[in-house]
Image 1: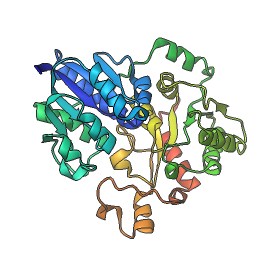
Image 2: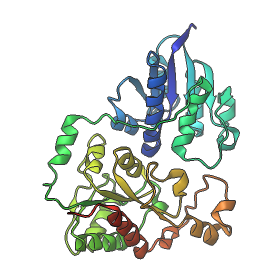
Image 3: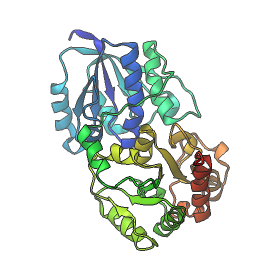
Length: 350
């Protein structure tokens, strides 16, 4: 097969937060190599979120289709070989899928981050830099190509119709908005309805509007109902009412988004919205909101000491502490204190 010297293939299927982290890498590649064709193998949800990103050809892979889907994906790729495959996911399924992508150079993770036979599917590795944010690790995939990611920008493709939908959900009356996206796909990262409600009630007392958002799962619907039942003033409930294209525009309307380590955390950050992140099961310095972690609650070290018997500084970078009740370590006072840090940083009206 002939080599397609001016084309690159990115492989990152999920999750929503991680595919959001890839967008700055796309921007870096586009700026450094404006004539290079970029293809991205992504999952269906990520495709719904990012479809329309300028200069990117998406190839959506549904994991339910197994090997048949992998063969179909191979047939959808352009003829010839890519100059390089950037294999940015170490899960076994993604590793096998990468074997269906013809490429001269196959760039993967350093040995410390490799698992599930990742090393068998690549022939080059990114630099081993422990202690960095997930976004910076993904950003380093351009370094074997002689490029450095020195700036981080997203500029997500948000259709005007999605912005119009978000603007129509409530009238701007001058009150700042606390948006609560209460659920992660990792259940043990989730906080508790009564504690969300306590922080929300505090925000209302401070003159804020509260908005609930989330997906269509039973877990998210149940959590939203439980929060709503404990509010002194009902929140605007938008749980299950937006699409993945509308979600970024919705998050952009908030002054502050309260959420555990989740996709909406990183989408909000990409849209320039400040995040009150709730971290005990995961390390905010590795996977918290990239641009600004001043308003995060960090009980990761407490969780390490309680559940693993050692301080966070002695854990392998990236260790998850997803135990039952780990989020009990985050108190209502922690949430209110983080909220008040944000309020204190806002300019006072004249």
